[in-house]
Amino acid sequence: KIALFYVIKGSFIVDLISSIPIDLFLEIIGKKDSSWGLVQLFKLFRVLRVFKIIRHMRTREEVKLALKLIQLLSLILLYCHLVACIWHVIVSSEKKWIPPTNGLETEDLYYEGSLTYQYSMAIYHAVFLMNGIEIVPQTLKEFIFSSFALLLGAILTSILYGEMAVITANL
View 1 (tube, rainbow, N blue to C red):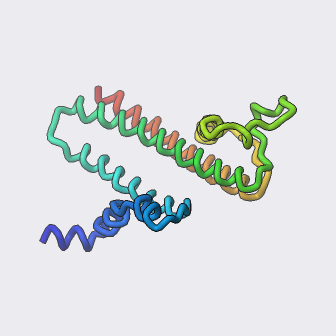
View 2: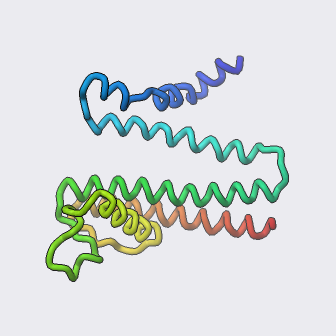
View 3: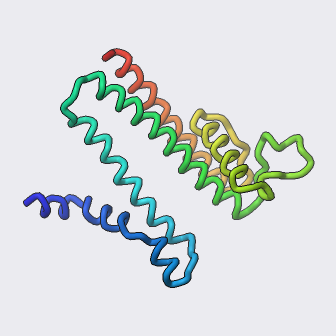
């Protein structure tokens, strides 16, 4: 009965897809196609179950509030990471975007820099997008994505402030 509910509810499909070691299969057959890595995003849906577990825990309220705070911080980090990765893919495909911090320099360091430098710059600008600060998009793809990220960032920020108020009130 429990297994049937698990399959019907749809969680089984997500768990099945996310548990397949795609990297191992690609390495065995000798292909290095990065588009298969997107399937690994299904693992993020498994992380969202933690929210449900915290809600149904049988423990003191202070522990639940501390876990909820960690949950909110994790949600911010996840948002920034996803936005940074998507932004990097978009700007790397066209190579027209110049980060505003590089505006005074004569050469563009973003595309020639190390992956760590590129990720750091992308995270920095993802935080800007979350807080509603413009990051000077250059192409239509960049405008569309930054508009979406700004809207999602505003929603996330409002949720964060609301939840923080609830946590503070319950302490």
